[in-house]
Image (cartoon, rainbow, N blue to C red; front, side):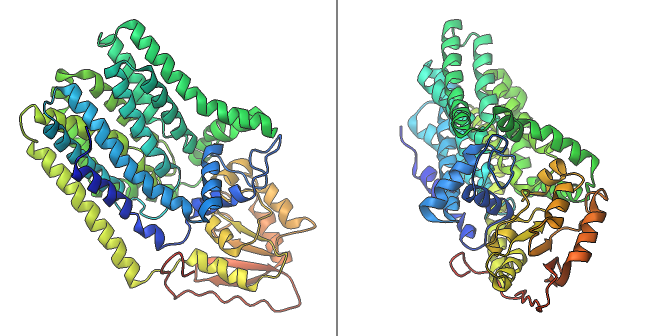
Length: 510
């Protein structure tokens, strides 16, 4: 059974709605991942070499491959294609849910798939989340939803092959962002609940479970095998990809949380404004009747939704791209809703209103972003880095303090400090002793950019840094009233011309 025209149009719309990625420079995470990928030099005590990042190798492999194939912005095309695939996966999962619910007739199933496809496209394309950057969340969610579709099909067909691929895709998504565990949760709960409800014979359930586990082991085995061949100690790999998060969580809990507190409000507003909260509310409202009809997929979806939302709530950082993570679970929730509605012969008016508002929000947000871009926006970070690049001499090194890898990227210079992100810096160099060693060593960086005030998170260790800046560096200027730029003391005058007025137009016109 093929997809309807509506599904294909929704997938195309999701892809095309990523056009802002052609109109804005690299964001900090993208720039940081690319810098890690381009300088990758693993060793026994270092997963990536010159720079440190708390991400598994697959996300860096992806950035490295896209960079080699099409340049620094090629990964954004992969993200756009991923959005289209997410919509197709939503339609495929809806088809499985509809068949399971007893929806009869190809036309009815295709119509339900269209409803969910349109809503999924609207959620993933909502510019309130992030229409520009492509990173782990955006790369991972198509794999998660495809895994959920295969899990549903594996249970219906008692297919070990489907279960294998479901496990493989779900674990591959975790390799792109550790918190994207929805595919594993959904598949595990679905299989367990099917066995407990006697919808699967015990032996069939065990075979599917074995297939899913075998599939999930493959990405793990690939990463571990690579680490062994590359000479990276496994405890180093484990800490960077798993254990670091507990240390980082303690740091977040004890340090100044003013920025994170402000982001909580933004995150909640986007969750409401994008219409995601409406999908959640409609699902919870109809939850009791859906449980009575067929509890197994409802329990699996509810558990997945709870885990995804909990991951966002416990992140501690509350960046808006985290809202990409619950989209697969919300798409499944909507699939259950429309299938349940169809048993009453027509979509419930609440479901219709929910989908309409989600689409309207997405259209308004994208138009608003475009209007703002037409009016003119200046990427101060990139302009600051470009100004330094124009003023620097061969061999100059630049250190950006405070986690703005986009500034570092724009300078075109390497950093002598391994921390391109603020959280690893705050966790692994809490007293800034490593930073002090870099500044006071025999080969200090030529330029120092204070992207964040030195004492933003803690007074600990800031005095030696401030003394080094006063003694060894000359303050040049504050770029666009935002970033303080310093240069090593020299008899020659240092001039820095930062363009704070020219808007950014496209990634080609930089």
